[in-house]
Amino acid sequence: MTADTPLSGRLDDDDYPAYTMGRAAEMLGTTPGFLRAIGEARLITPLRSEGGHRRYSRYQLRIAARARELVDKGTPIEAACRIVILEDQLEEAQRINAEYRRATKEGPEPDGSS
Image (cartoon, rainbow, N blue to C red; front, side):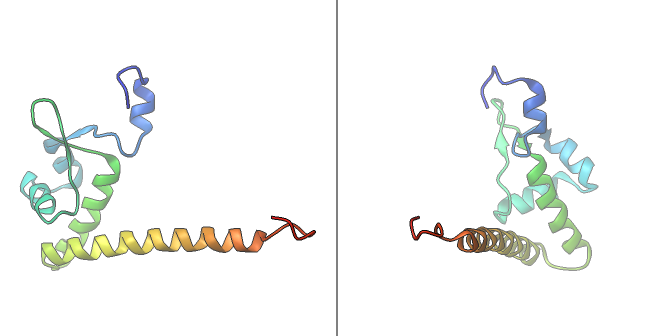
């Protein structure tokens, strides 16, 4: 995103780091320490502001919320982070597989040309 990108475009961007650590923790109903812990476990890597403060995107908050859900059910934080990573990888693989199947169904043109 560049400085001349309209604000509304940034707010609609799931990857735009719009939330401070305090606001992100408040939205998730957790502590900044939890966000630091999932960062240390490499589940999410917040971007840093010019002043060095962590900033989170909506996508990262959804990932953090899923980890918190697992931790709240008693899953150790490292295991919760690994589960969320594997769930995310599975979702991506399923998306790629569905695209491949659609492309295969379309197949070559009836006259044999591609």
